[in-house]
Amino acid sequence: MSESFFGMLATVLDIYGAAFPVGLAIAAAGALFGVFVVLKRVVFIGVTLSEAAACGIALGLLMGWHPFVGALLTAMVVVVLLGLPFERWLRLPRDTLLGVLFVAFSGGSIVLVAKSGFGLEQVKTLLFGSLLFASSQDLWLIMGVLVPCTAWLLISLRPTTYAFLDPDAASVLGIPVKALELAFFVALGAVVAAASKIAGVLLIFCYLVVAPGVALLLHHRLGGVLVIAVGVAWLATVGGILVSYRFDLPPNQTVGLLHCAMFLLAVLTRTGLPGLSWGKGLPATVVGTLVLLGWLLTIPSTEVSEAGAPPQPPACPVCQASATALSPGLPTAPVMDGPAGEPASPNWPERARQVREGLHHHGRAGIPAALALLREDPPLLFRSQVVAALDQALGAPSGWQIRAPASDPANLAVLARCLGGLATVSPGHSGTGEKIGR
Image (cartoon, rainbow, N blue to C red; front, side, top):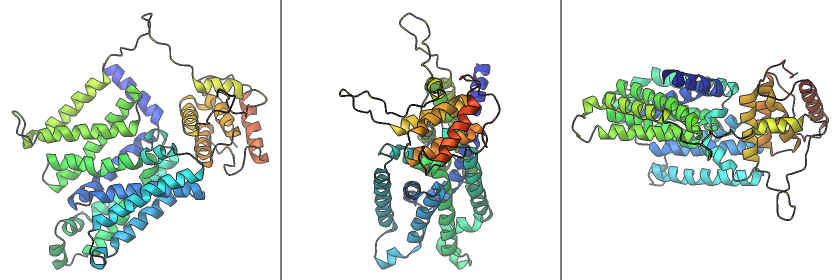
C-alpha cells in the first residue's frame, strides 16, 4: 500500500509539475485572506471578485491582452466601486451593489466569449480553470503577486484585525480603518486576479469561504484559525489532486468537494455526538479526512472486460496524430462525419485539451499533434494555449505567431523546422532527444 501510494504521489508530482506548488500557493493565500472575508461578513465579495476576474480574462483574450491584465483590471473596478459611499448616496446596502456587479460580470463573461468566436464551451474554462495546466510562467506570476500581498496581510495583521472586528474602537485608537479596508480589498483583488486563470471561480471561492469556515468551526483564536485554514486548504488540495488522478476526475472540482467533506466533518464535532466535542474537533476532522482519503485511494478497481481480462487502454490520440503529422503534407480538411458529408464541429476546447495533455505527458512525441492542430487555425484562445504548451515541450520559444494564420511565412518556417527536427525520430512516448526550438 505504501509503495503504491508513494508511486502515485511521484506520478502526480511528475504530471503536475509547476501546477503543484501553484495550487499550494493559491490555497495558502486564499485561506488567509478568506478568514478576514468571513469575519467581515462579506463572503459575497469573494465570488463577485472571482466572477469579475473571469470576465476580465475573457476581455483580455478578446483584446489580445495577457489574461492577468484583464483580470486585474476588472477586479480593481470592483474594489473601486466598493470604496465609494453607495450606502450613503443611494441608501442601499453593499450586498445590493455586489449582486448587481455579480450579474453584470457573469453575463459579460458569456457575452464576451460568445462574440469572440471561441464558443460557449469556453465558459467552463473561464469559470472552473484547471490546476493541471499551470505552467512555470504561471508559477512565477502567481508567486510574484501572492507573496507580497500575503506578506502585507501578515505584517498588518493586528491593525487589520481591529479594523475589521471593531472599526469604531480602531478609529479611537488612531487606526486608519478606511485605508486598511481599501488596502485589504486591493490586495484581495490582486490575489484573485492572479489565481483566476488556473483556479477558476469555483476553487477561488472555495479557498476564500470553505477553508476559513472549517477553521472557524475548529478553533476560536485568530492565530490558530489562520494556521488551520491554511492546513485545511493544503490537505484538501493535495488530497483532491490525488483523488482526481486516481479516478480521472477534474482536479479543481474534486478539491472543492473534499473541502466540503471536511466542513461536514467539522460540523459534526459541534453537534454534541458521543465522543465528539469542540476540543476534539481538530483531530477528529483530520483523522476523518485521512480515513476518507485512504479509502478513496485504495479502492480496488472493478473494471474488467467481458472475457475477464483487464481492459486495454484506449489508443493514445497524440501518438495517432503523430504518425499522420510527420507526413510531408499535414491534413487541414475538417473531419467529415455528418450524414450529408458536412464537416463536423471542430470542438476546439476538447481537441486543444487533448493536445496540451499529450505535450505534457509525452513530451516531443506530442509535438506533431500540436502542429497538426495549429495548421487548422483554431480560435486565438486555443491557439495561444497550444503554442504555450508547445514552447514548454520544446524548452524554448517555437516562434509561432499566434495572431497570424498558419499559412504565414513565419509559421510555415516554424512548421518546417519542427517537423525537420522530428523527422529522424520515430513517434513514441520517450520524449527524448535534442531540443528543436530556436
